Length: 462
Length: 123
Image (cartoon, rainbow over all chains, first blue to last red):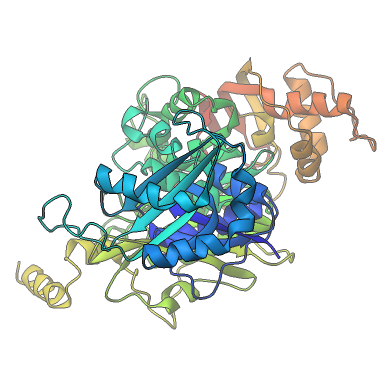
């Protein structure tokens, strides 16, 4: 029977909390039992762990953990809380005799006035701690959290509703979340090289944790762009390969490629194995089963659409594909040849990515990527239907932007079978049409069916 | 960049070029040596994915003759250190990789190889 621990999460990305805990537990090779009825949308949760060390490991790697406490009690009133804390006496009686301590009283969604903070501390006087109070470096820190309902967007006096909390929690602090400051370290604005579609630091870190990045692992980003996720995965010790159809994104303007400059800033340039310019649908990989994880944010077209080699079909009719001689003839001598590209529709990109991952990943390897989707039309089948034999969903976390959102999908290769490389041919007979199909068009049409029709009517007239 | 580990994993992928398309030949290359972090477990795990003769040839072309013709049965630290250096610390910064079969030229500039295919080379 393990011990109970109280986890306090940052007030963001609640759908990502549990998958991150599970991934970090897997990195360190211990089991984490998540109760079925756990409400991960709340900032506090109580989990049972076999060892205190496990709680520390989670706090040192999970981006979303603010702190972890040894859990003593919870209650909807202080009377209830104190009664339960008294029952737990054997757990804290060892600190009575001679341990320096301090108390912290804090709240979620609220600020407790100092006078009442003192009152609360004094209400624990029955614990009879005899050691000295040390505000700077106490041996133990007892923490009391009050959880208030979200009052966001209302104007009210600062102390209104003080004491009307949903629930109060009490425990002994064992570790502050030390991975959370990485969000500042990887801040895109302070990065030497980034682009207008660079992924924000916090999400890049969450994605890196989903890949189980660790020293000795090899991780691939087939749409590396400006390298946002390469820095965070490399920070956790993994070696990273990157490719992109557009070499300009990886290079930037200086002689030294932009991704290498930014990686040097973070001290991980030696972990960027190589960057290559190619279209992942026409890739030069000699063999499969190379990577421990594939991490990517496919361009889905809001600011930059996905492209693959080839010509748009309409242009085909107007001008036949050029022969090699023509290409050489038309190109000025000082310009490198740039092959034509065509748009890459998101739902085929997503299914191709899963097939590619099955070929390129080692067994138990993970594919971690973002899938944008239309909030009202999304159904679970959208994600299920892009899977193929041997690939299974590990996590699916929503970042909601209102009418649309993006889902961080984690998929595991749960097979040791060998597979052929994918053909990347477009399938015509798809049984299920997912909400993310033609996402770019839907985005610009504001996700409204009626508008879509109006726009197409207007363009017909024009 | 373009370390020999990468060179060992890339084959020509032009349309119809399916045999004798590996290893790509190195041409007019400029090499730089840069330290990388040594990880014996990574090397031991990766060695099964390496095309050994291609790696030995490429290293010798670039003046590194430390690797034996066959991978040894006993992977001691001395050998792994040499393998580490060849795979991860030799960087081709400029030059080109050429397909031995179809002669497609993949140029390398500022350490990034351009593996894009022309329109007539895709299926």
